[in-house]
Length: 219
Image (tube, rainbow, N blue to C red; front, side, top):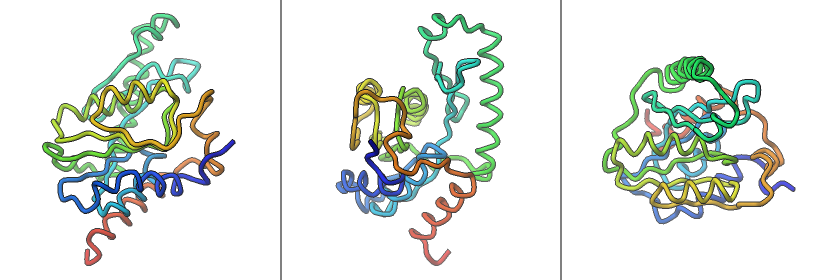
């Protein structure tokens, strides 16, 4: 059933689809933490590009937190699945409660992963946005809408595995998409990996530091 051994292997395979961007000075890899970071690390290594995290949090349906009714990205930019919200009768009060909780978690992760530093300049950059997979695409869509505000030169999504529905939706929003598999039926990202342990905060920090050292070994 699995396609990849782990996220690192998926990143190595995905990076080969992006070799046209190797050694470009205007390239930046943005990883969606936490699972996207090990994938992005391998891409950044092969392309010789800087990487950092771009923070997005899923907004889960109350009582069914794995089901995304939307997502919120850095800069407190939310995107909602209004059809789902109405069909499940989620109240405005519930939405506000979840939004506040995820805004707090965004702030915590921003401080933890980037020590509160702002994003690098994104204007006129080629951005490759990376995650380990997409079931609904809600997280990617929130990130894409947020990143477009910065007017990058080109916005590319790199994703090892995705549902066909999410792939179609994401493709319509970006300049380019690189992916390896879009199997159906699609029950969850984890089933396509042999090893899909949760990526820890410590691993995220270690990979960000290792990536920076590869580009600037004297630092």
